[in-house]
Amino acid sequence: IHIYEQSCEHSATGAFVIANLLSSIPFLFLISVSSSLIFYFLVGMRNEFGLFMYFVLNFFMALLVNEGLMMVIAYIWLEPLKAILSLLCAQ
Image 1 (cartoon, rainbow, N blue to C red):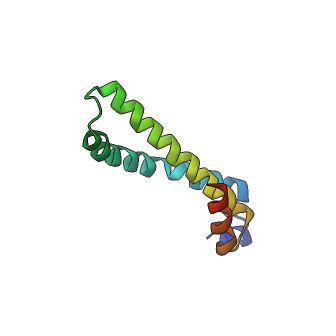
Image 2: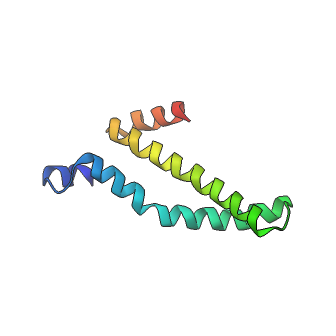
Image 3: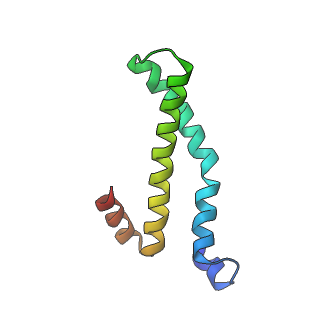
């Protein structure tokens, strides 16, 4: 998608990466809330709302950092195999 937009000069590469990262925030938050609802109570942690929200925010930030790292590595390497190998090494 980015190669098409870059050839039509719709957006710069940095703007495309930041837009993808910002557009993924609502979905990452939904993933973190839904997963936390399952795992937090399944493990048997304390039933306090403040601690649960702390767990959700930690999980959300971990997903957001991982997504940002993935976007930066995909920006550096345009070949998917090199991007996947670099992401595995960075993780």
